[in-house]
Amino acid sequence: MQVGIGSDLNYVEVTKDKMLGDDMLDEDIIESDVELDNSDVVKPDYDFPKEMGDPTVVVTEEDQVGAQLSKSKAMDAILEGNFDEAINHLTVAINSNPNSATLYASRASVFVKLKKPNAAIRDADAALQINSCLAKGFKARGMAKALLGSWEAAAIDLRVASELDFDEETSMMLKRVEPFAKKIEQHRQKYERLRKERELRKIELEKLRLAQDRSTGKVIEIESSSEIGIKLRAASNLSWLTVVYFTATWSGPCHYIAPRYASLAAKYPKVVFLKVDIDKAKDVALEWNVNSIPSFYLINNGGEIDIMIDVDIDLLENKISKHSGTSEDSLTSALKPCEMKDYEQLLPV
Image (cartoon, rainbow, N blue to C red; front, side, top):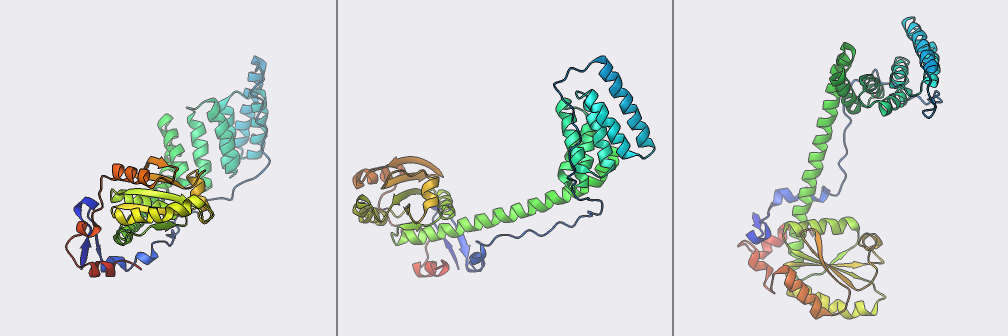
């Protein structure tokens, strides 16, 4: 058995089989872990940072020469496998010439060899701040992020490094990293799709609930921000005007207008009438920046189109009539030919 809401309501079809799983729609989708080879991933390093040099100092020619000598010593130490010694020489070089992006990138690459990714990223960032097109900076940062298992970020940096200045080591690392990054992206897209599908199903279900409530002329009470959000999306999907009425039990004017508001709900079946008690749904009142009650917000297609802070029910009705373009016709006339009894059986209690 299928039920359709008329063409002017964007025609919704719902079957009994489809409705069976809708009581699970409010549960979170739990993502499974992505199976990756993380055997080369290391724990983050939290060593005290090495000196970064003072970028405000004036670097003399003598300083540049001294920095170059220290860098040469560092290269010799690297060739001998003395990475800690190389770090010390490069730190001296950086203090002598803190404006050299290459020196920071060189020290970052040594930190990668020492499997200290955080230190490497810190130096690579410093290098790229000085020279945003330094391939060596992107390469060191990409390799450091790979050590941390940040495969997508690593792939981005390594691609840039390869485009700026291709080398075999960068290419080999990129070939290792890219499949992981792609797998993570596909995994994320899968769950984004599932969440979107679930959200669409919630909206379809809410459209039916709205139709049921409006068929009885019911004012719908809102208790949370998430609840009003799904109601507004469903109403927007149906192209129905929504009136949001903010009230409080202690307000005399609200007591005065409440039954009159209910009478409007019975009179206009293709307008959604919501009621928000500002004491029970404080998050909604705060989000909507409600400062006075009673207040009425008219929403169409997800956007606020009018507001009234008054107890003039005739003025409110004029606004509803103006913005909804509807008269006091019957909701059942908008339904596809079917027995209302069958229709109600499909709807959740």
